[in-house]
Image 1 (cartoon, rainbow, N blue to C red):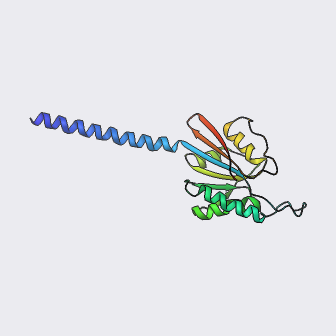
Image 2 (image 1 turned 30 degrees about the vertical axis):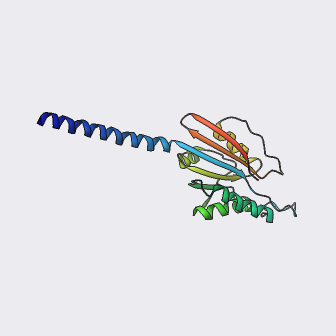
Length: 175
């Protein structure tokens, strides 16, 4: 009887350890999924064509708040923006809501090794421009698939999900 009880305890301990390992594997698997949410800045003030760093219009401010509403129930770990008023203002309501600092990225050095390492396993919002947003998506997926966004389009959302070797892109139009 003692041998049977000992065997049963060893078996239960082994099964428990295997369950623990499976839970750890699942956690590691979750960390291997990275999701990027890429948007273009909201509507900018076009009243002064010589201004290279315009702020958002009232309509753009409303869109920025609406982006925050869209992202409200999504887990966002990091927020990146180019260092322009319009992109930072677009990101600001979401950053405030999520208690995150807006980090800058260099639009001339998209998706480099440091960025990949920093964002691996995270959910990341990236705010860019009509040209940098699709270029960033192309850099992430490793192919030139998406063209520049029309200058009057501010409501596209690119969702890029990386899981192991699978790269998935979904594009939504959010008004």
